[in-house]
Length: 113
Image 1: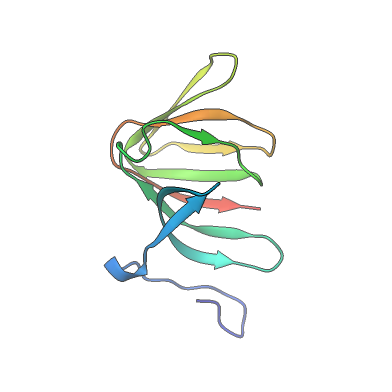
Image 2: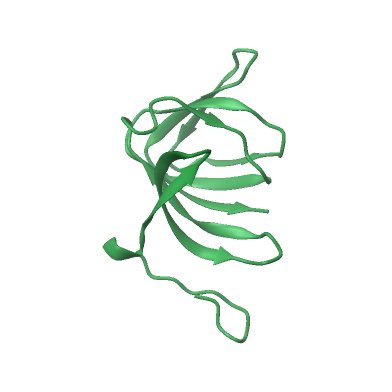
């Protein structure tokens, strides 16, 4: 929630998650912290291995995130594999493309924009 002073505060509850849909396909759940008109986005995103077995990853804005739990792999079109692990911090620019494969229940805190 953004207040009149401009800062955001959020509390994660079972009811605060919403289905995240990208390109008409359900790709996990999201809990928003910030959805600013200027394009800045921040929040939590989670996905399970069955749902995220193999999905396209093409950030529409720079996607910077900290993996809170789980493991996933990004495979670029040229075959490079990038392991995403709990505790890791990553940043991918607009124009980056890969195939996302979720290995275990996965959650990240992200900032995009």
